[in-house]
Length: 135
Image 1 (cartoon, rainbow, N blue to C red):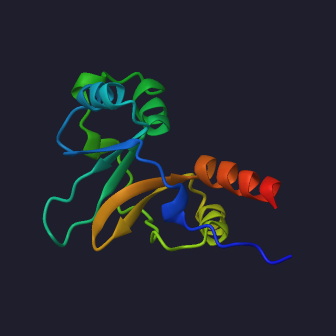
Image 2 (cartoon, rainbow, N blue to C red):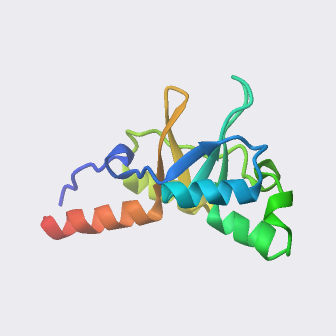
């Protein structure tokens, strides 16, 4: 059976917001709620910098579980940086293998040095299973 190629750009989500790392976790949570987003991409400080990533699980593990005040913790303190990013034309099967190899669940999709989306196991699995049902 020859599987049709499903690319990252075909299934990536727009459930993210770009924010400055100097913002507090409280401010970040407010932006996430306002935009119904699931992740914060932390913007680059200069052209040679890298993007950061803050997931809700990071806030749970690094702020809530440690009983820290969200209005006294900056996003840069809890972000993952640099983050592993993927290209929009990558086959989702390879993306899933990359996630498994590095133990991650989500990654920014970057094209021409700009974030254009966010990919997670959720989008890949749902799209892959939907595609397989239609074959």
